[in-house]
Image 1 (cartoon, rainbow, N blue to C red):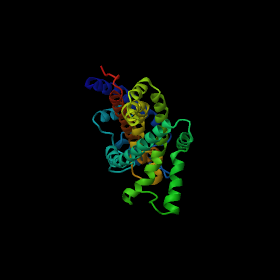
Image 2: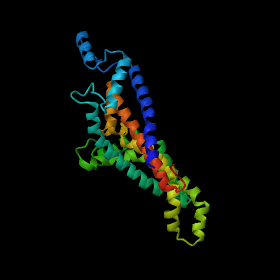
Image 3: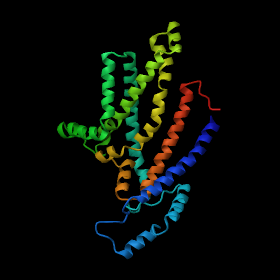
Length: 306
């Protein structure tokens, strides 16, 4: 397994290189620049600023300079947040995104798996149709619609919870966590139901029941591990996306996570900030997908990493 992990990590280097290269040149194609304003700067001032940040150099030279910094773990300075590097901003924003994302994925996993198993055990019943109907609603309604509705109801009308920010302590995270958790909860519920229905009809489950095992033991020890395989596949990129923070949710609730920095960086043409978050996000997806593959070996004994 150790050699397999090393091969996967080394194999991820070309992937990150391609992501970095495409993102670098695509963001430079966008109109405008980080120092374009409603009131243009004097030509001399703008030239001095661009020289300070090496923006006056040819694009290929800028790319080589940025690539050299990445190899040293330096994402460069931010053009808009003075006295802050991109590393500093990611370091500041990631704890907020991490706490928000972990809470969201925990709720999504518990509620989604429980609902999916519950629906699978009552296939084609009214309970099954109700659970899957709610799951389809959670998939079709985007979280940028759910979030304002929750704010309007729980914060404005009932005044039970803060409408945004982080000054309210843990209560400030309730509404954004619910908004983040709803779509993955719905996906996990549907994946779990479909997989569990197939597993419950498998030969090894019939054999376990024929041996007289209690239904609870058959479900937890035999069926559930195999039924979670599609869910584990989904959780790799889902965890990366939810931990790095939904750009919409963090923007709506005013949470200073890296998703919000990403939006502000794109609006301000803060090239290096956007690039740093893209590379960070891509690295996180690669690592989590590797962990998903390793978990496969635990869930399915037939999987071997030779």
